[in-house]
Image (tube, rainbow, N blue to C red; front, side, top):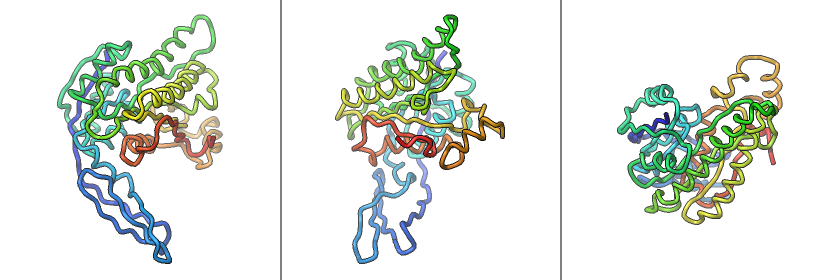
Length: 304
């Protein structure tokens, strides 16, 4: 049983982070409510260049906007919801695990304004119902839901392949179809952000179906970006090893985890909040000339 929870916004002022190109550069910032804060960076010699400030300043622009996050009780989905809620958005969490969904609500510290039951995301009607649960036009669809399970290439495990394609790829297509008639047309282009993975670039032994589906997400993202332009901007994120429940096998100091960590130029695994920050950027006014892209979030492990 798929569960949806609509969370109220919790816009709150956050301290602005000081950012400086070097010790001789200075910022001159000004901001207006609901807009991306801008400024000028003063350079030696008197020249200035236009700038934008950090993630905290772009958050106010989401005030009152409806954001639907599938897989919203997972590590990345939860952190993404946290950022959008802090920026004043109205967030609908969709997740198949009711217990984890309730735990996500508790972690966010905000009671659900509306609790709506949907059967699943299997099929166009169910996907449309999930979007309708938002209660009005949707500004952004963030599709993080999916399955991650081994498929050892035997006739008996073909069902695992079908499940991976359905939940990781086909659901994304059905959600995009439903989104076409439900997105918010009131202020600039709406957004879709899909979840791909570095598994599509590297391949993942034992997870053939998952790798295939995540590669399909890249193609789906590019096709949707052309199909829905200029009204909807469509992008994907491709995380590497992120410290979530799905990657629990990389916890601790086992040899496999250590080797994978050393293969990453930044010599560490990523945090769910670091993926969430990119998702928020892709939904902000700072990314209005970005569509059809798959953004690597992997500490430099893949630089193509």
